[in-house]
Amino acid sequence: MSGGPKSVLDLAPSLRTPGFRLVDAGELESLFSGLLGSSTSVIQNAGVGDTIATAKQLNIGLNVVSIASPTPPGSGVKLPPASVEGQTVFVTCNDPDGNLVGIYTLEPDLILFDSENAVTNSGTNKTFIGNQLCMFLCVQGRPTFNSVGYWRIVTFKS
Image (cartoon, rainbow, N blue to C red; front, side):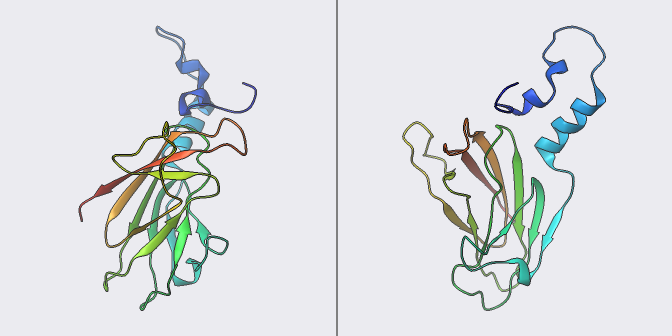
């Protein structure tokens, strides 16, 4: 597999063979770590940066963000690189005051909303969330290091 995996299923090639067979446990661990992450991150006030350069990078999996009140302008966290299709990052911001936190992407990745798609290269490199749970799903990984990867945002009502 030169150049790294193109989709999450590439992390477990023994699953691609049809029929009954033994599946490599190490491949399954890689697959589930790539999909769900292996830990939950709790990001307190000190970890929230006020620029894309100082924002704390989120992990694959569940991330809980807690921010200071009042929120400094531009406070935020950043998504990991959109490198493998199917990677999922959940972000929840539990702020009793309803402050917003910015979610940045690593350059040159973009966040896509409902009406946007990767074909037209629409999207943004920053969005804001309040007291809600959001899922960021990698819908197009980076084929090369400097190419664009895309995250699709799905918002759940709180």
